Length: 142
Image (cartoon, rainbow, N blue to C red; front, side):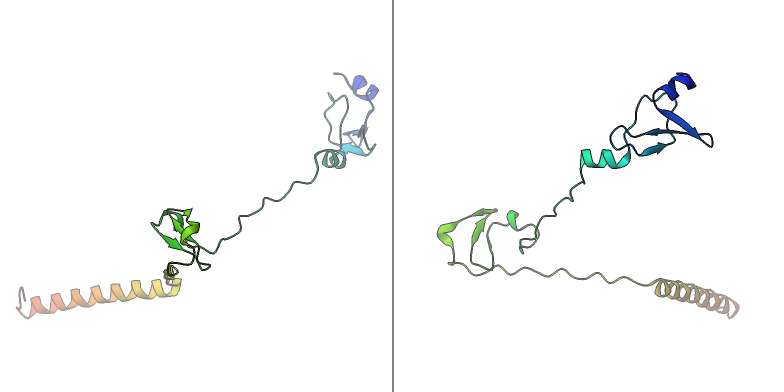
């Protein structure tokens, strides 16, 4: 479309930037294409669409991972489950299943890794020096 058509549709220029007023709120909208017939501003669009809802996270049940795959699992209230299916007739008749706590993985710090590398290099150098000394002193293979 031509510049004249843009201006006929309510567009205007300020310092070379194309503007057009929102057709709902009347607020100016910047950086509009000159081919635009009408525009809707950000606030008007937000009021139409609405604020996005946060996804709800599943609530933890207090049961260990994989409890529904166990042949028999008894929770802390005495409910008995066979392969994840509750058995109401057996409630309170079995001992509570104790879950094994996961072992915490110990990770080395960057400094510990560097110290271990240096120790390996030092041990390799000592071994090479000892090998050379043995060769000089005619102690081969031993």
